[in-house]
Image (cartoon, rainbow, N blue to C red):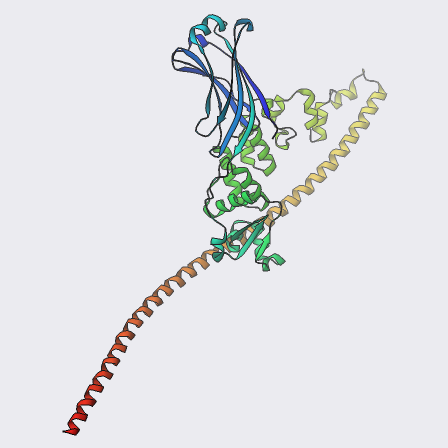
Length: 431
């Protein structure tokens, strides 16, 4: 794996005023999909430098770091290098320390201190967590369909998956050939992601920083609204992914609420994904872009005209400073733009009509799914009633066996008594 490197540099203010066990933090910076920051801490007669990033419970980051503290006018440098490992239980890493008196005498410049940490990531290890539920051979007897992904098989229920996903409802209960098969192969699916996806459907849990993107990808692929909504809520409320990364996911999977939250929080150009559709026509985003970049994000002729450095149409008609030839060229260009706008408007109307039709079809499909859910509920109730009757029959059968045993014993005793009576009669005859 290629090495990943970056450098954090920050000038801390009012460092000399730090009391014992007080600290200052640098702003967070995103590097390779994670947020990093430095912290300085006055403790036990020293100034200590720490590095921080948030790792998940299934992650380890192995890295080299070189920490530098610069003196006044950078004439001297306090430097220390080491190899460290970030784990869930060690998100703050000590990098170096310097004597507090030496710091004040030789390094502080009017209370300011420049600190630099260079990080070289050697290895980023993600450990799959323990499965919450098995879909292997031990559950085969309870399933009626097998999903084959690569070299793994998942034993699941057609009705249950159909109640969660219109895609599976069509696949399993529709008129396709697959509805008659006992095993279906799924293409372009990561088996571990499918495991996490099924765990969520069956238990409505298991979404974490490590699983959310895999679950979201499969939920989008197989049209599973509940899973998509839960993933969006996790990304809004709990995820520590960067704003840029979240906004990319919002655009890719059409997560409108997440997009709105991210756009409200954006404060710099670094948070804006490149060529992201979701940032277009947003006033806050436009204000962060350089003027020369805005023309690359226009969507209509009107918007393009508004960015051109030309006066309004009426002023062009009356201005005596513009030559007739130039005016004619302008109106000819404007007419072309107007024609293009009419074509675009017509296409937009067509798209809106198609969108309404799709919404209607989706509404009808949801009604069918609700009907299937009701059937599944009734089926479960019938199964529970059948189990109750079976237990009652088993109890009655047990009682009948007991009575039959007693009856058999009485017959045996009767036969024995008859034999004894017969012997006495024979003796009486002889006498």
